[in-house]
Every structure is written in structure tokens, then in C-alpha cells.
Length: 249
Image: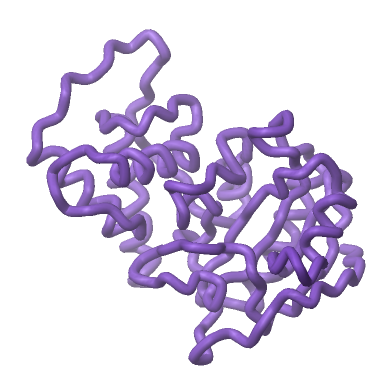
């Protein structure tokens, strides 16, 4: 794999010698690779990532992996708020939802799979359940890399998790009945167990719906509505079961 060096000044040391245990994927949300590179290397912009992958598969290294790049912003996963100190961030060139969101081309995905495999080999604390999207760690603010990103394809190559067996819901299926408070509280607990930050209130408020939407965007991208249903819960339970096996390995 060819990697082009394009150093960014936007980094600091990882805080408190934090272990690298998250791989965090983003899209650039800008009109071109060059616009993204300029911003990620602009000291005034104060943003960066460790790598950027162009649509043709060319990889740029912006920040050394041992350093803390500035890509996650205000975020949370599994009790951790300083995601930047724990994560390696990869930006994928894509205009994003505001500028003509489109699928990620095969060359870009192939390069990502190769780079991610190398990163996981170097940082074995990044377990499959900790290969995440920006929307997972910041559900109220972010939607990237979004529903057109092929998480299933990536998981089939050993990078990340994907549900194994879960009931499928077609677009014509009737909407589920409004869940009760106990059912919502149970789903909130499952989301927290997986890593999302949601209140344990039994009320389907804005924060819970944002987390549900983020989960669906990652693991059930054909219907993102932020509403609890049988399929969403089954997928979440399956992923938690997979993670429990990983923890025993």
C-alpha cells in the first residue's frame, strides 16, 4: 500500500498515556480531496485525523499513530469522553450529506480494509466492537460515515462487527406499536451496554432517539427512524452476544 506523507500540525500527545482501543471512521464532508487536505492541515482550523483515503484508494498519513489527532470532538463511548486520546481516526473523501452524499467506491473501500487491517495488527486493543463511526460517538452532532458506508462488507473482512442473525423488516411492514416505558428502559440499557450514552429514563427523548438513529445508521441502514422496533433490538442483542464471545477469547 502506498502512503503519501502530508503532515498536519494539529495534534498533541495522547492524554494520561491512554491506550489506543478505538478505530474511528469519518467522511470529510467537503467537495474534494484537496479541500479536505487543506483543512486537515490548517493550524487555524484545529482539526485533523491520522489518515485520509481518497476515492481512488490513495492514502495520506497526516498524524503519527502515537499522537492524539483532533477528529472526534465532543464525543463519548463506553464511559470515555476523550475519544481522541483513545482513537485512530481515518477520514474518507466523500462530500457527505450536505454536498451530494454518495457511496464509497471499491478502490477506497479496499484501501481502507488494508489500512485498517494493518492498524488492528499494531493496536490489538481495538476489538471488532470498537471499530466505530463518528455518528456512533457523537449521535446528536454527526451522521458520518453514514448509511451508504458498507459496514457489512468491512466486517466480512474481519474489521468491525455486523449482526449475524436478526429478523428482517421489509418496507411494507406495519409500524410497531408504541413501546411501553419498561421496554424503552430495557432498550436504553442495551444501548448503554454497547457503548452509547443515553439516559436510563424509560422515556424516548431526543438523546435516546439520536443514539437509536446512530445505531440504525451503522447496523440497520435501510431504515433510520430513531424508533425502537423488534429488528433493531434483535440486532443490538446479537452484537452484544458477539462481543461477549470476543471478551472471553
